[in-house]
Amino acid sequence: MGAGASVSQDEVSALPQYHILGGDAKFAELKEDDGKVPLSKFEDPYLKYGGEYRGDVKDSKDFKYLTFDTVPKFSPAHRSLMSKVLTPELFEKLKDVKSSKGYTLSNAIMTGVVTPHLGVGATAGDEECWELFKDLYYPIIKGWHGYDAYTQKHPVDLDPSKVVFTDQQRALFGEYVSSTRIRAARNISGFSLPTGATDADRAGVEEVLKQAFAGLKGELAGTYYELGALTPEQTAFLLERGFLFQIPTSKNLLTGAGAARSWPKNRGIFHNEAQTALAWVNEEDHCRIISMELGGDIPSVFARFCALSNALKESAEANGTKLMWNETLGFLGTCPSNLGTGLRASVMVRLPEFNKLMEGGSHEDKELLETVCSAFDLQPRGSAGEHSAAVGAKFDVSNKQRLGLSEVQLVQKMIDGVAKLIKLEKILAVGGTPADIRAILAAEQQAAAASVPEAVAVAE
Ligand code: ADP
Ligand code: MG
Image (cartoon, rainbow, N blue to C red; front, top):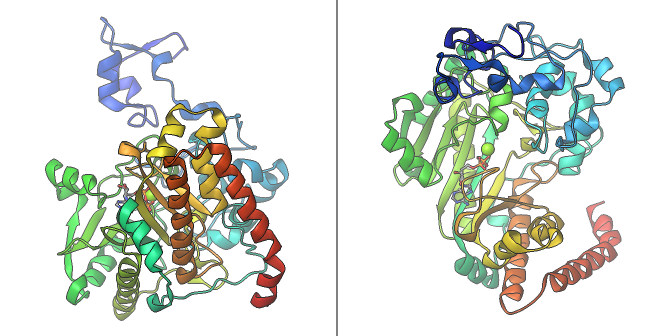
């Protein structure tokens, strides 16, 4: 087929990523009078970065993996840590490395290449990858978490009684926070991760988890729903309340990593009766455990999270399975951003003043929320999850790090950081300017820097 050619539906549906390009619906939309579509309008956007479809044993009807022979053609739009870390030398060193389950360097970088806006841009396909491709992952981990995986060890602390939530913080959260959610990734040893999984892996993982869910007791007891068996109304209901994972689009990590193959088969959601303890199956990780409720009572949500984490671990172990974990990287999973605790503690927080700046300010003002969040090691997201918009000035703000700090430390950092963020929102609301906010931040950072020697002394 030449570039100027028109193609029939049969021809175009044979293109490797046909469904990602819009599938039958896109074909119908572009169809011309002769019943064909100019190929130029249906060009595979994945091919412009230099990879080729060579056939990969993991290929499925709805997704084909790319193979790269050299460093991909990164563009200025590529902002991921992977795109910065992957030098030609590193590429050469790792390009023929393959895990025993068949995951390659090309597989590991694919989503970061074809989804340029991602921040991390690399994935692991199984447990072994974390060792085999560490020269790619460790610098990414350093950039994201500030953790040196070559030398450090990861701490664990799931004791909710250690979290401090002052009356003043409780009052601030009560005023600005509409809901709280704490989740973490958990993966089952022995199965490929969703990015590298076969149908049998996904079915096996689902079976192990269903048994573990069946073992949950008391407040945590509940029901597992297969994604494919949910009606569109049930799906909409769960999505609206933030209970369900996002359905994969060409924008998120899952699609380009091959983790959305055979969707929705063997995906599902578990929740207890009160819908405050949930678990997702075979989304980005084998399992995401979630504790959530309305309001801003962080200690309550964290206590339930710890109970769910322990119960799932015990239940899985009672069935003879083990979670992926090692002392350098903590809980292992698909994305370098979710190692260690794998924990993301988020609040839906109303920030109308920051939102106004984002919508109408100068470039610097638009970035103010990002700047403030990053100064406190927080990460802002939109109201419907990663890479979504902030509807009604509501933002999902969470800890950014997951690794090198314990669960207790991360929840504490989220509480302290969000409390400061709300105070800054209040300053803007009474006429404070973005310049005032930047000055306050600079003063905070100076004070923090001045107290570092003391902190280090205590830590040692
Ligand atoms: P994660 O990767 O942590 O699972 P996502 O960004 O993919 O998070 O979002 C998953 C879903 O959880 C989205 O629907 C999002 O709106 C919802 N969500 C996140 N934080 C909260 C919160 N504090 N309260 C209610 N819903 C939330
Ligand atoms: Mg997600």
